[in-house]
Image (cartoon, rainbow, N blue to C red; front, side, top):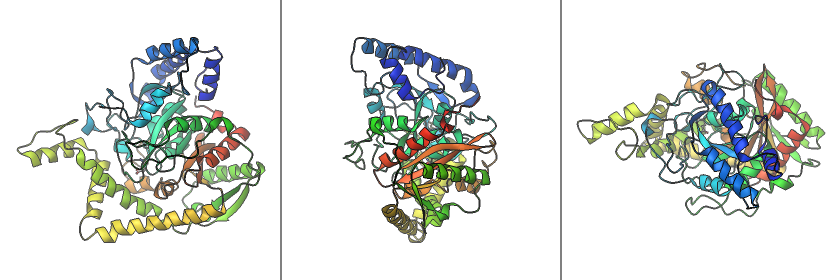
Length: 482
Ligand code: GLN
């Protein structure tokens, strides 16, 4: 049985009709992980009790019990989400030996829905990066070409799905970390609207931008998983009571009369010609499916990257202040408390994390706060306004997810500015708090290209509709790396 291309939907159908057991499914994935993970390094930990859990679900299913919406489906979890009793390090040495004391809300919801937690997926240290090279556990490679990066920071999650190690993984997205690796690995990634999914138990990077979301093979699978993890959570005051759910079974794929905006600011120099061609071809396909394409303008888009790289480090520098080495994780002794803090943080954090702590502390300090931080917040409001205006006119906006396909390991690692530029198309959705979906739309030199849809707040449904219609008409998402 080839599970590498199987969707959640297909696996559930097979299990419900008795053609497949969860034990067989999980065993097949474990075999693939066993054979392939040493090359990909997508998993930094695989749970030992997964077959046991699968057998338990099989038993319950066999006697007609309700085993949940994801009954018996294995899922990978990014290393920055707490699972009770599991190690949880956010890819950092400073959390060496740290164990989750409780489950993140998304984890509780997955377990209640019958999902089997397969293991921890690799990531850039504290989710800071676009290549999954900065992890304390070593780099993850791209399943399409192991000399290339998988994107980041949820590179382990995206690579695990692309390599057929699991049908679904959770990622987190602060500036593109679900969508960009999904794009570079040829799978689907959704960043939900800010507030749609609880952040309780997610290690905070930039609290006003972070969202958890699914990485899957099909858009419908992303909808199935979103419906399980979304919704109000008393532990996260920014989570929202939802009036609409995604109703995955009922995704209507008729695009007749839909209006799609093509922002002129996104199709400028710096974009790979092959990526541009693939995206424009996808736009033609959407037209053939009935959508009307409208040229739009997002005048402040050009300032998004600069605003993000002020706001995100400011919040991150504050969030990372809690890692003092005293209560958990890595600890280094010093002559006094101050020295112990300095040593612990100096040795425990990697260079990119330190860089952002310094940038953030600088822009928040007296004298620079107004010039940088406050100004960036004003720019953020203008960017949000651009999207609000544009989305009055169109149902969704379509762009590339990333300006290039996967690049070589090591190629941008010592050049942070070039690395930051790879987030140019994804960060605006976080600043504007709107939902965004990446769907595979072609290849450039055998490396996957991603198409991004951005929509109105809490209108994930429209993105699913667009993505599912596109996937019905194309077969990019069915291709797998050798
Ligand atoms: N690559 C971006 C960064 O380095 C986004 C990270 C993220 O979304 N977690 O900040």
